[in-house]
Image 1 (tube, rainbow, N blue to C red):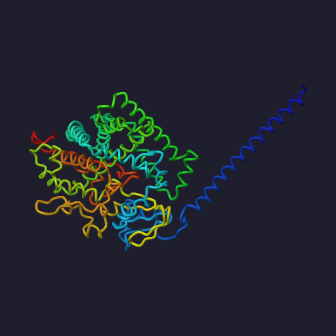
Image 2 (spheres, rainbow, N blue to C red; image 1 turned 30 degrees about the horizontal axis):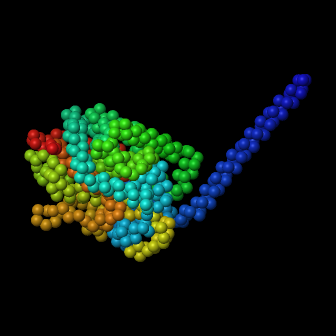
Image 3 (cartoon, helix red, strand yellow; image 1 turned 45 degrees about the vertical axis):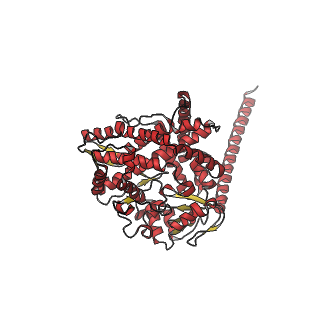
Length: 518
């Protein structure tokens, strides 16, 4: 073959290669254009009033609310206090937000079936929670709730759980705090409580011990991955349109790529946990996972995985959040800490019966959750168009949110002193017996059919922690967080957690020999 022929073939190959590259680039550009066009069309069709110019929607979209409020939840509370009905529309979100107890009762009781979690909510948390009890409606929810109710209501399980909590407080929590006191070091109390709650929920729910609160404070890979997944799922809910995160998930970019990796790790570790529980045997074990495994109902690993993740969410983050905020209030109100010590006594062992008898301490816990509920809001979807008791019209397939954080700050519910931390507002009669408020005024544990099944266990755990720590130590919030007028900044998440943690200094108190748990 002549050199000129070879050169012609090479030129043809280069030309074909160049043409192929151009065609590929054109196809890629066209694909991107079609995806973008589809997104815009869906956005126009499915995003209610995307260009609404009302002051509420404008403030939400621009973030201008942050000039006057530390947290988004505080802005919501302000808007709801200003509303004559205690209800506000966020047109850009297609969402109605309420702090009106009559509306809450209507959603959670009167018209329960018309206000399910809904498919959109399930989509937000589906990658993390799957078909777990917190993310489903209908028969799937009823079945899981019935089983969980039987297990959590069992005297055997409650006794087993209390022994674990008492042991964790004595053997791990108090030694970690004592070590910090001896060394005079500042520690992050939120981190300590999260580790404590993670160890406790893993023991109670799965019969396994990750040992996160040992003195060397090792961190669990599962806890880290769960934190990341929880935070990023919450970011989905804060997006102005679901199309934002759905597009990122489809393209596997940004926060959705990070979320995918975190959930893969959660899945792998949950599977390992299930396998380990099986290998250890479950027929004679009292932990919740073993009792589910030993039931007559057929459960595959996917179903058990959803149970594991749901119990982690319910048992770790909420208890850690409530315990952390409790010591913010006790730091600001030392007379309340002194009253807890006085009621608990220094010479009485903290048995289960003793803890349950502490009426003032019970009131302190509920007052703490009034101002800092671990779950600040709860979303439902209106299946068919409806009218709430306050006259608010709600379109079918739209989002409706009741807001416990805002409800704890409504003068119409709690009076003019709603901002004050005042446990005695929960006490009545001679001797000050605890008197609960209506669940519709105080939906921290939800209400009626969806009332929290782990409520009593959570209160027991918080009481055990609060009494033990207050008896043994003074806890001083320090540094920037201790300045006068400081308010915590919340991190986006499924439960309330404080940005930067809660730095504290631990100071030992004098204890009598009989002040521990039995």
